[in-house]
Image (cartoon, rainbow, N blue to C red; front, side, top):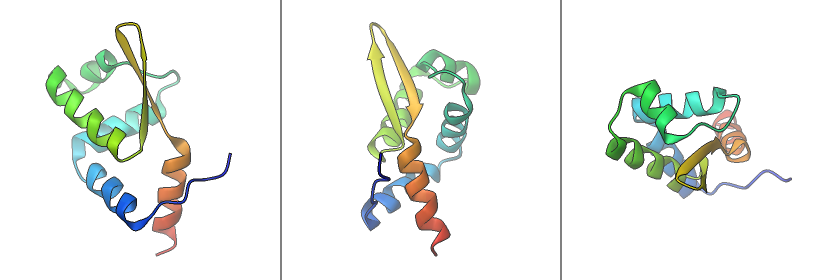
Length: 94
């Protein structure tokens, strides 16, 4: 699968999403998880309210950094490694 090409607007959106320490920590833990964690896992990790978790996940999803797959009443979250790699490649190119 080819790496996505990120335009300047998406790079800025990703940077803005990662500027929040809670979102950055959330993404770090999602990336490190062996299986796609659920929202309840995120709540256990960070001790945030469901509304706050939902807000942060929407920001990460809008930036293209995560996929959220709904299975029944659960939402499984995974890092979009292709987008992450494209973003870090753009940063390395500075």
